[in-house]
Amino acid sequence: MPVAMGPYGQFQPSCFDSVMMSFVMGCAVGMAAGALFGTFSCFRIEMWVQELIGGIGKAMMQSSSTFGIFMAIEMGIRC
Image (cartoon, rainbow, N blue to C red):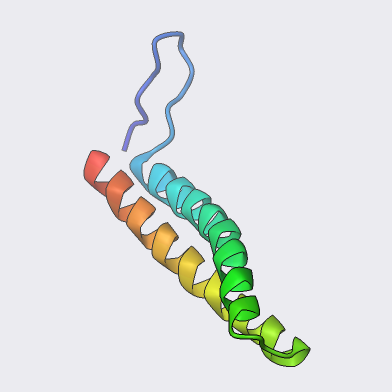
């Protein structure tokens, strides 16, 4: 499938590349948000060190996957 040309002759990324790029961007934003909110919630319920690391990691993974999937779906609709 031919790739579209931009106004100055540069190549535009394909739809699949755009969806994957938005998924990765959503995962990065979700990781940051999960780290902030996970740390706050774990400190709020007074977890110990071992539980704290697991709780923050779980919040980061859940948040990054959610943000990534929603960003990928949004970019798929825009393509």
